[in-house]
Image (cartoon, rainbow, N blue to C red; front, side, top):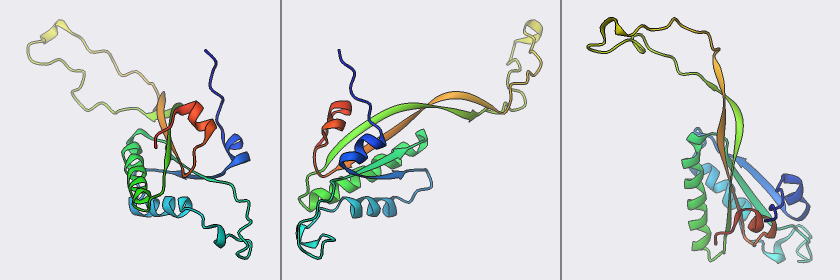
Length: 166
């Protein structure tokens, strides 16, 4: 089975205007949703930057929303769903593409509290705890990263790579 094409910013920027947003747990949903909608608004051909001539050759817009941490994924999905609902209310068709990948990141180690690793009731002397071993402050882990692409027109490259939701 042939592998889908690799999608990167350069590939998409050649044919589309790519607007990227990063969603974190501290991101305000209303502000980010407004920014997404501003970038995705259907373009009025008589209102282009070409002094109203309507002959503009603007590239179609793709908005890419990325949640670099698993904790921000719920917020990302909320922003996407609100934006899609607002666009549907304006009778605009919205195409959605979901990409999931993993990144190798340094994750802080959980601190063991006093008494953890100690025997429970009835263990007595039959189990002996080992001394503390130095591992460092962080550990390497593959962390899932979700990216959602939104566009008002179908994007063939994204459709082939990730599937399409309308």
